[in-house]
Image (cartoon, rainbow, N blue to C red; front, side):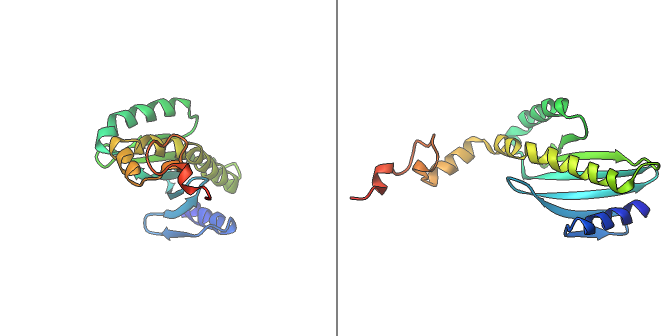
Length: 168
């Protein structure tokens, strides 16, 4: 479990809070990105030595958006150099997976850091557009309009007018 132990040591040094499962050499944590929290699972494989970083989007694609989401992820993956987004078409879960083959002659901590932060940054950059795309459904738009948010959004067409909140 050399890779597993080194990943745990690196996470400790970076001050991450995590839980580790020694039996299946996996580690779970949550990342606080610019626009939300993302669950992350690190899988440490020994033969060959591979570190997999798996990040999950905290929203699921609704059934009516499975095809569109699949197409969007296909196009997104064409622009990504390392790792790939995946869609579980059964439950709508969207994940990003980066698999890093560990080179025995290179600095192990540097390889862990590069894999981890490459996955983190890829998820961070794509978090908001993917979440907005997945959540942009007629039902969501109806629910938002029922909140009666009015002037909270520049393009809102329902809700109280700005004049209502002016001083008399």
